[in-house]
Amino acid sequence: MSLVVFPFKEEDPEVLLRNVKVALDHPRVKEVLCVGASEDHCFRAVSAAIPDLSREYGKPVNVIVQERIGELRPGKGDGMNTALKYFLERTDHERVHFYDADIVSFSEEWITKAEEAADEGYQVVRHYFPRSSTDAMITWFITRTGFALLWPKSVLPWIEQPIGGELLLTREAAGVLFSDHRVRRQSDWGIDTLYTFSMAAHGLSIAEIYIGVGKLHKLYGALTDLKTMLIECFAAVQSLKGEAVAEGTVHHVEYPGPVKQEVKEKIGYDIEGTLWLLRENWTDRQAELLGLFPGKVREGLLASRDYPRFAFMDDGLWAEVYGILLEHFEPGDPDWRELLFKLWITRVLQYTTTVALRGYDYAMYYLHRMVADYVHRSLTSG
Ligand code: DGY
Image (tube, rainbow, N blue to C red; front, side, top):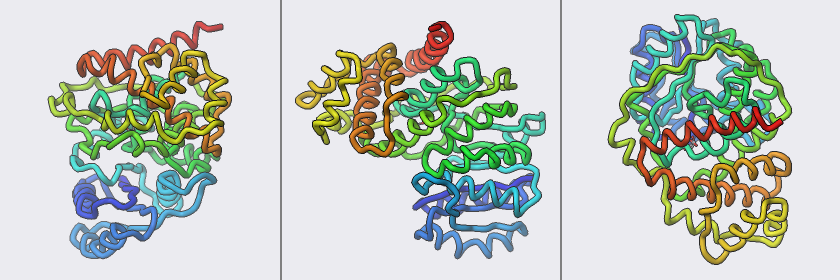
């Protein structure tokens, strides 16, 4: 029997409550827990609705504010870890499911498929779903790229959505993750990276299940919306760079189904608004830090102060840039943060205009090939 958790922050209470009801309706679910970042309007609306829901379904439903567990910015990591702690210390359910609170396409299928994979013996079940070719730009250019370059022999590069927030953990897996101090410390957006890393590092068996309907969450405006997430996800990978990961993990990925036209046609971010960001917020120190990078990168970025330039940032050059960032990036330094953001933007724009432009199927093929090439490069570069 399972606990279902929805971490949330300033969500639409109607969407969250609908999802809570879907979970309560499921025969495998014994309890639902909502973990709020603070006592915001959503928290109050959900708290008010809960006593009736609990009575109607005859199952416990709780809403709590996240505890301060980690050491970085208090964010989603504290929320997820608060839920893990609650699951391990205050319940005896066998499994815990996590779902982002803003999924408008949530249905019993998400829970059933995860339960079925866990019935087959997997310790971790991760949901994955089709995403537009210009969505998931942190996933591809930060997380999967970093996993491929740093741990090419592990399962990490092959995990479809390594920063996805939808997953099931058995009690054993939850215990392994919660007793990993690296996981508990990660209170910010880096938490998904850390959960994925830790499950691979400890050799837990992983099934990835395909949810064809996808998440249908809101897409982004200019890439500024993703700046903090980008920085925290990169810093999370960087903090792990010297760590060992088990090899030979059991990993099964369900074959994906056909992708809806709506997803194939969706544009993931505002391209015009993003071009402008390359001109903004320059300081002399950022220009100086560019001295650490290859000439093409330095010249291209400096020229962007007048006119956006990005065509130079292909996958080969990005791997070099990534290596330099792994060595020198300082997460607490505003100039480094801004520079990482600009470098990533050039990579996203180069990819958008030379790869995504050629269509969804080509773009997906390219991105998977890119990860495989990085794995190869890492394994064969002495
Ligand atoms: C990602 O890159 O996966 C983030 O969710 C932003 O789309």
